[in-house]
Image 1 (cartoon, rainbow, N blue to C red):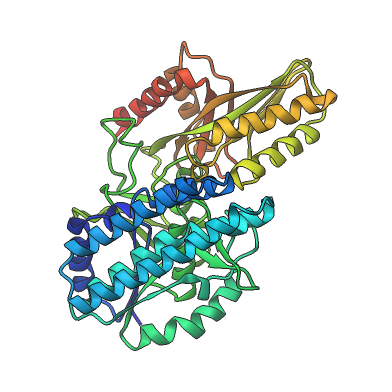
Image 2 (cartoon, helix red, strand yellow):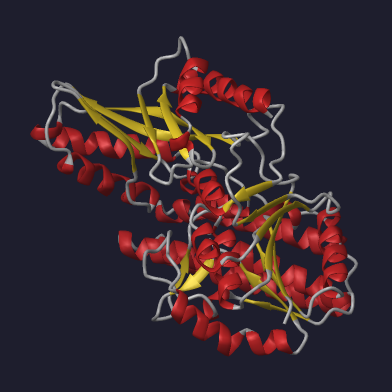
Length: 469
């Protein structure tokens, strides 16, 4: 059966204009496909607000987290008041919103009374997925109002994960069994499910989340488990860009990318995709298309299995925050890597990825990536946690930590094009390069620079793409 999964990001569900576009797209695609499945993200900014509320609850700041929840209630109620809904659908939505938010307030109240890091992580995962639950219910109600049989579903009943709260990984075989039992019968009856992204549950049924941008990951897992013909990711840009358009004004849409290329793009900071979502798609050859909800006629970017484009070796350049460590000594690095791993997992819920490491006779250098899903304050928090641990151990106190930026050029088979590496280094002439490494997938070439030089380094490498395009 023809199956399409469409994931709608926060920017595509947060206004009446955007939701009208969602409705139009669903009505059109429902006529083209036998089975349709939607994945909903929270409205823009909602997950950040819920994280802030959770941290305030940890601090016992009842007034703070209650204020945030009240603002979220007002925002969602105002949105449904603007939508063309019948009175029954509107009242049902209002009741659902209040129930979800009041239940969340109970969790925050318990968090403010308990000081257990493990319990806190579980409690945060109970609350920060509420934004997706609210969005899914709003979309499903809008579809029903327009004669589309639809139901909102929480993926706690569909996606089984490990118990790494805050950055859980789906367990595909167990998820397939849940999906076969709970989701496929609904789709086969011609109903359009609207499922929550970002959320899963452990084998024991405890809610988990899959890291920032986890709704992408949800769509990927569902695509594999229902054997989708294609997955479409709807956002507010025309596709995957050659650079973040917020940083580079002349960034351009990339028409097609291989799975390996887009995996490297996501891993090294392209915020449009979750870094871990590409793996399942690549393994099962499920095509992915990125499209602009406000310009649906545009083809977007198609991600599938394609040969390398040797005429244009660099397709994109990314920028991502890193934490660089250096010491005036050489020797084994296992202890310092373990120390950083512990600090990063405590602050970002992500284990350390050593991006670049190098040693000489009297100096050592390491650079660790700070994942984009960890939030804007993650670099500062990670540096503080690392420095605290360095000072606590005499054998590591000579190490120094500093923020850095990892600039990465993306393209297939870069190992067969040494002239590309030479062109990148030439473009960076005059800028200090702290470290450099080619990725083992041969689709990425990364340089580490000071934060102060990141913007110009990004621009110069992007100029290479423009001049060879």
